[in-house]
Image (cartoon, rainbow, N blue to C red; front, side, top):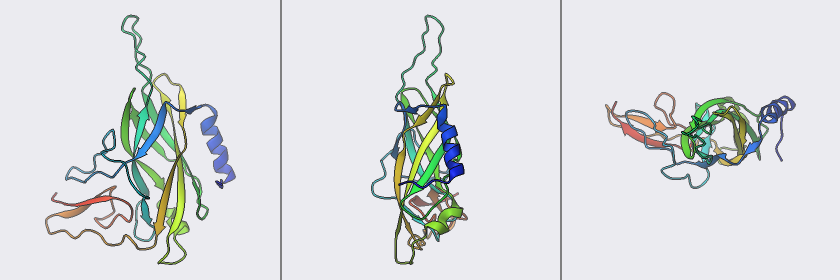
Length: 217
């Protein structure tokens, strides 16, 4: 059962009141994080591979928000018509996320702003913020040797080019939370430095499911 703060529930109702749940625009899959390069992290429009297993968060080591790459799909077709000058109005613009948590200690729901364009009859890859760093202590397992479990429930809100609003279906993401289990980072030989996707702070270990490599700037 999802536990919601009353104010957050009211906000969620406001977000969804003007938008019917959409099956055409969806959060399709979690992606394997891409390999980092000197240019940073590139999240392709479609997953190179979908993430297998349960993603992990080290609530002690991680120093940035918990983030995962996702693939968004838009099944709407191009409705342009050259004969009468009609332009396509089915591109989708994701503007915000609605996130609630279940299965673990209480964490306040969250509504981060995002900006992702999902083209008509296409897909888009992006990095979703899913758990705020200030909420990590509440999710910490009761003992260093233990593992806590939380389900991140996320759906996206946005508008089509037609200005019609949409809301995706809920997408549940189970997460394993540990205490210090991902504290070992990459050791690189200078001038190479450790780089991760999703990124970490100050070249340290990301403290979460990520892909890392030694990269020469």
